[in-house]
Image 1 (spheres, rainbow, N blue to C red):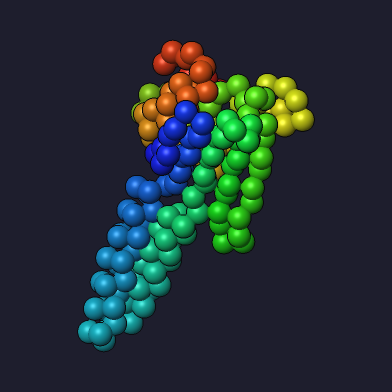
Image 2: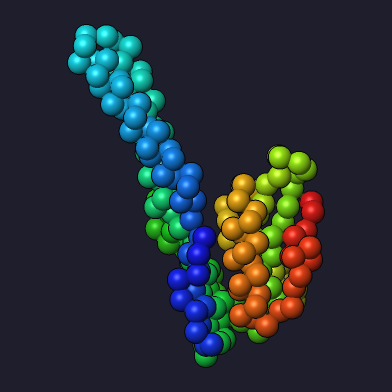
Length: 167
């Protein structure tokens, strides 16, 4: 999660599961190597390890290749959410003057806390919460940092406790 462009008229942010994707890809590649070595050594069980490692590596690549992009443009008065995935891209455009803020939902307590990043539109044709992350996950600090930066660009005065909602 990072801001890729910030000017007075335009803010662009990229949201993707980078850490999880890289971890899965490296972890899976490690098991592909172990499985391949076991197969080369004549052990048939190596095929199971090879296939499982390949699946985990593919999951990592899948997570890295499906980013969500948020573009806020004052000149065009639009907030555009672009989601990429295996089936292509989907785009949702919302009038920027209807966007209230970027919001972080918090779920759970203690070390089991999970966070979800949403664009909040309080009224109008696009009323409701528009998710930027594909579900609850760890990394509340990064999500909160992005929310504070986007809210500052929008001119929303938010304090740290007010930017996190409990569910």
